[in-house]
Length: 282
Image (tube, rainbow, N blue to C red):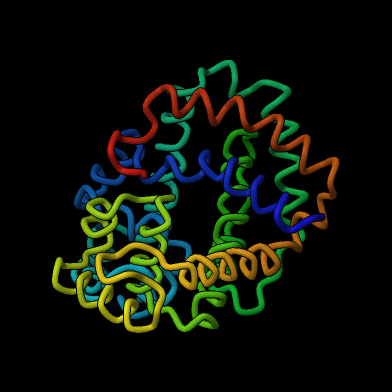
């Protein structure tokens, strides 16, 4: 597999995983357990497969979040609900969100079943070495319903890719905050206000990171990417794609193309249905 093709596919279909962090359906299931809405629910649902870990572990594996923000919610979240109950609630919420955004009939369609099988084949090509967040999710039992098997497989692929992305960022000498600042400067992903708000960084902390990256030649003083910065971000993405290649090699070019063809209409329907709030992404 061409790593760039595989990376493009991964980013396109990842939407069906990422919507779980924005869907009110998932949030309502988690708050019903006693979790606070917003960032506590996010940290808890994503970290739950690791067990009742401390804030340091979550900050390390999530990387771009302000550690002080993480510690504000973790491990307090485990006093409100167990990791197992949180994972079960997440799956109930995903089912409700998929039903609302895609339609109940779609969830049991042959296309979703085929997509689940293909995504599971890809996920079987992932490896656990140096991939703590992926490994924790991989230890969960596979859901038996096709739409949840698809969600779980896409989650495994996303966390496997994310663990590798952290390795690439470390190799590039980018801290969690610097990674977020430089990525926001590309114009892809979160807008600066959304990145600061969701990741817990103050204006002063953000400005200090801009100044540091400007001294390195990565950004201009006003926060725009320089040519050197653009090349650095490109090198990080290329390294991420190479490190994420194993599952797509396992699926093969034809399987990858078929999985994208099956998932893309679902992605477009979910986005058109309001899966993500306006103004969050650049």
